[in-house]
Image (cartoon, rainbow, N blue to C red; front, side, top):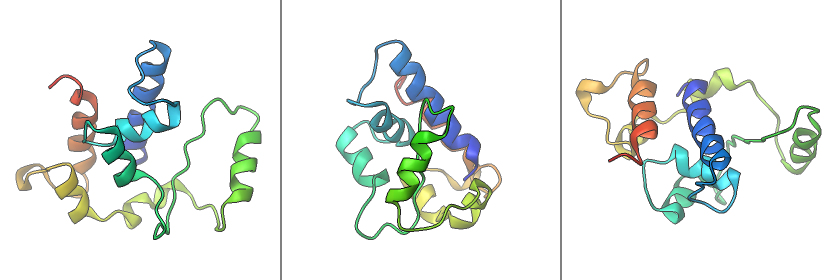
Length: 126
């Protein structure tokens, strides 16, 4: 996955919040909901939320120009921060293909993000 995929979901969540149209109760839950292909918020949280077996985390922090919130969150995580450029190495492409129902004709590791972003952008339209 590319960072742009996450930015598309975050942008959609912020847009929904700015227009008082959140589907979830918080902006952070809306980010997870926006990233998910599912229209069920609970399913979205189960798929993309933190679980006991989680080993890699992506933390979304909004409205934090000073970096204060990031420092607070980082202190609560037992791990080390890594650059987001390693996302493609961590991605389970077979699982992603199945989750987003990406067809073989749409799939390769370089363009799968395009297919996912299209689904994020159009989820509420279809």
